[in-house]
Length: 474
Image (cartoon, rainbow, N blue to C red):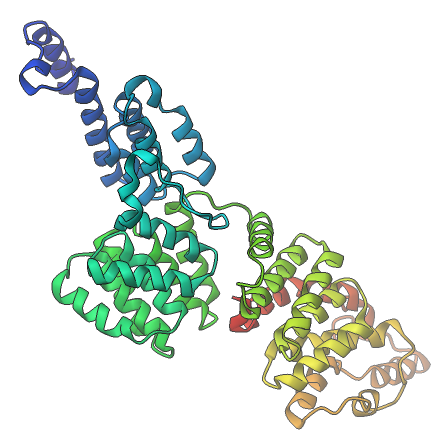
């Protein structure tokens, strides 16, 4: 059997290796630098093949062989291949003291500026040996990122604008500047995006800017997706475009497509955790930031924490989070629906009816609240002594429903047959001595109990809740 060609080539390489002279003397490079360059190239190849695990390993090896291989560190951070903790551990593991002496302090400072910046911004400490770096644009962008990730968008805009005046196409500044313009709803994003497309049509950040503009304008989500899709086509690993792509679906309550886009972003931008852990971390960070965060950031976070706790069957905690959100924005129908849904899961049908009724008072076209209100009333009537013989309208006369809601509730609650008619037929058959046909009509006992029906429909209702939440809860 013929040997594989790759094995024969490898053996040929081993035979010829002894006859090769050391190239380091000709290239004026050390052996470690050459090996580092090979690892860097190997990492780029793996990255192009979407093998991010081996690409990450190769970039790390390149850095350990040559700490001056800044490109490897830049690719690790810019492509979000490591979590914030892993980035710190990598920096600590680099043999800076062994491989560099005079530049050790400067090299550590430059590396630290590339790390993830999710903590409270602090004053940038520049080594005394390089005092002239205070005005360096990369250093200013690094500080602007700290402010951006901590929701201080006005300060971030001030810093990024200063950078853009000196260098209108600063590669690291552009994504941060675009994100800040969206957060502050600045129309100058229109001019910037068109200028980028004219000058750099093959750069994903250009189409990312156009997509963000249409996303910011509102009611142009289809246009936004078209341009954001072009950005991800040019560079599949461009995480910000995937996040914006998810937002374009989320604002239209297209949660399945939004989650697919966010999942792709989570794979590309390492460091995402379970939903509960992620939202709790966000809550702690917002508390640390303080007054810089507005109500419109607090309310969706608290509601999302409530949804996660409900999924985990932590109903008391879920109610607490939703009530906190209700204090911030009292007239949010989605929050009332969420609270009513939790009460229904806990069996508190009377409270659930009250909350769903309040939600319908704020938003009468809420399909989820109408459906769940019918189920809860049915369960509540089944648990308590019903008004026998009373019309459904009399049972619900304490609530001021519109005609459409009343018809929907009546269809949900009214049984498909008349129990009294069935009892009369049964009694007549017994008196005449005739046995009723077994399959002529189903008996009431053959029908699933209300409790079983409600439990089955809970899974469907849970899905309906996710698709009926307002944009604030996305």
